[in-house]
Length: 300
Figure 1 (cartoon, rainbow, N blue to C red):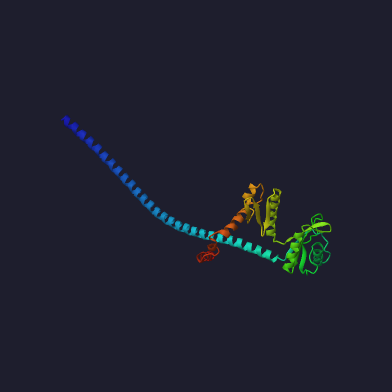
Figure 2: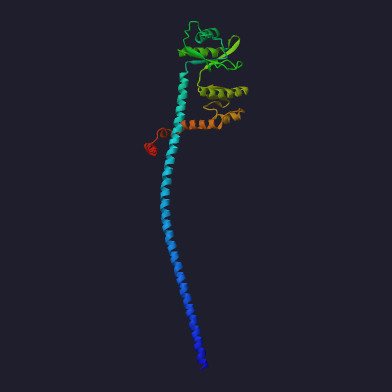
């Protein structure tokens, strides 16, 4: 009887333990299900966010593509404008020099020598210091000193240049040739000089070329300046002409000649050379209709 009671107690205990285990399993199942539900909801949220991100990324890609297209058009426009600026600057400088074709600059004439009539003074000066035929009709349109007189001008400064414009280009050429052929021309026991009247930009370029020529002459190297501002060298290998000093820099450096060429000047010369020789020149001279339409739409 006692053994039956022990077995009954054991069964009760076992059933209790099984009940606890079942309850724990049920709770664990419920928690797992809740966790899976939360995970499923999280995955769904992530899917929604990914869909939104994909949409945003697609829009961004479209906008980046449009921005790249606009950037390419802007680059073409910038290249076009740079080339046009180079071409127009060269044209303006050429026109300036063509307008000055009848002009002559006279240097080192003492201030006040002209009296009250510069044109008459120049006529007398030319007949006096140059061996020009007396019957030559020298017609002067105008003559003046440059730069204009200023009250605070330094009295020790060299005389201002005299710019003379002749009505006849043939007379102007005669004056220049005669002055250069005579070599030394003097007025009031002082040497004066005659030269072409170039634009300020061309004058600066030619001055740099002449500085290089002086250095070359010291080394017994023949060189001369060719219009507009080209350097012509005569070496043992023959003659060669350089359109700019920057293009001749390497050769001049090998000859021991210092060339003062800034980075900006070299870059501008490269752009000009590229503009002259580039195969894309014809394509870059005109903007396409689509480019112009795009710029008009952007302005609107």
